Length: 160
Image (cartoon, rainbow, N blue to C red; front, side, top):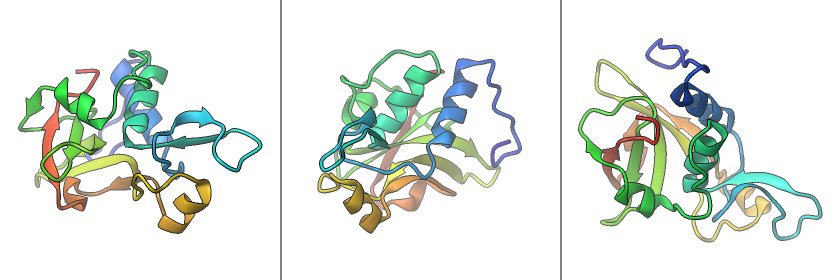
């Protein structure tokens, strides 16, 4: 059940996508990471994501298109129709004038608050798992889309 008391139906692509995005909570944030890869200083692969990786890896796992190598936050925004009232699975875009960050909408409360989830807390300097740990950079749930001051807009998600 999500924060609004709605069940995510794993029989639908949208439900699978939302459950997959939620399953990433706690996954380390690494700049440019799109899932299981070898990272600097590691002898074995590790699973890590950046913000667009959280969207694209989950979309592909839910039966959607494989956009991991082609879609960064700004391209997701360019291809996402703006929406005023977001629904679960829609995207929240952030940036200082241009889009540099993306999160997934989990739910919208009657009060208007929008819960979002995704990798956050890092930036282009977060390139090792040790840096991610030091910066507390990982996939998280926030009880408001305004957890960052540079919120730009909502856009239709990949399964709407």
